[in-house]
Length: 148
Image (cartoon, rainbow, N blue to C red; front, side):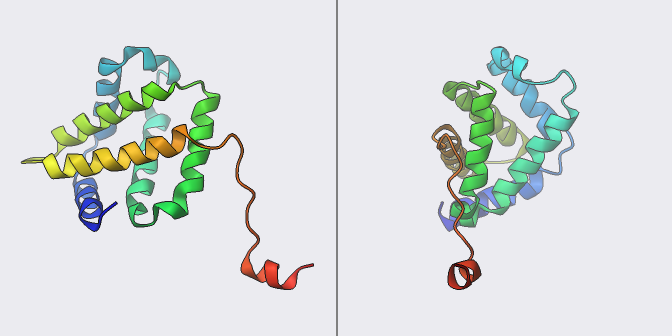
């Protein structure tokens, strides 16, 4: 991600995340685009919406250090794999998010939406291609130096 892309996403997220209907609008778009995905979600989307908002905020807040959150993103991908979410369904989610964000921003959004597209494509790629098992954790520097 370029600094300009990160800035565009961060700035737009600061604005659109204040919209109390943003996540609800996203799910409406998703179910309109891909009604077959509705079975993955509970009828009451309250908790799911909170999780999505938190996850989006987490990713946006860490765009400048994606390598540091890669394991967390891959773990999310493994969770989605266990739920039998198909690879092509990530595209529906991305499209619904892009439309929702675009509609929530006023003005010419081309550069911002292109930045979001790049970020969401990258995150989806990490999730889809996540290794089947978690990588072994490296010992801390302290443990590597002082343990047997």
